[in-house]
Image 1 (cartoon, rainbow, N blue to C red):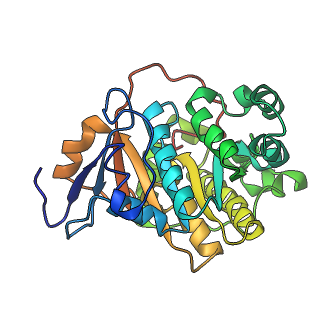
Image 2 (cartoon, rainbow, N blue to C red):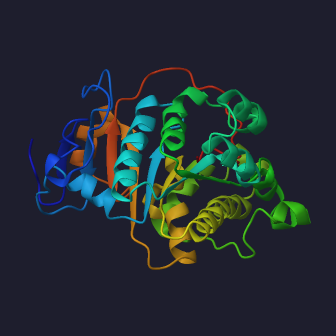
Length: 322
């Protein structure tokens, strides 16, 4: 494999991630792309050769790790699990796992499930998983099982369903006092030009965009900011509650991309932490990315994507950006 001055490519399998020299635990599952979480990690900005265990070291040295996902892709979730194993080992299980999948009002239910006080069936019923999130719980089950087995903490990060849609259609003034409680007092919009261009593309980007008939660009931008700010607000609350813990944020790629969503908001609210963002992408796009790398995150983790129809998810997204 060719190493360039601007792009370092290293292949990591379930075996090579567990570098014996550092004492990282062995990772479960077959190391092939077809059967388990074999993957390729690209660092768009790397200029020197990394050791085999460098990826694990980067996770272990971080206070907050973000691993994005395409919600319906199994191997993206397996990648998240491998990151969790490394982080939990390095931090001696002092880890909080933050989930976009659950709104902050469900924190008591999540606490019960993470601590083993209620069963999976009871959790799914109390959290109303199918309505709240919509994607197959089986994709997330390995993460929750690991949390329960190792007595990790978990945090419900999302803004309650419907709040973001109301902001997108009517601005902050459309919210009731009760709905505003799920958001920080001040919502800051990230005007990073690359991220703004990305949001413009998800919005439609042109005046003939059908969405513009019900959602103005300004309100769309505000709704996306409120969404990220709300989740970051919940994440920071969890970090302050569980002092000395690291955090793994499990969220859609759209909240991780360019470090402009949740990462930007957490950094603003809680300076001094060391962050690592990972964007997961389809393995088939690896070569195209090598030819034209993009700073989608600190690292881009390529995993096999399965072709299948996308289930209707009960996401709070006002549009395509998730």
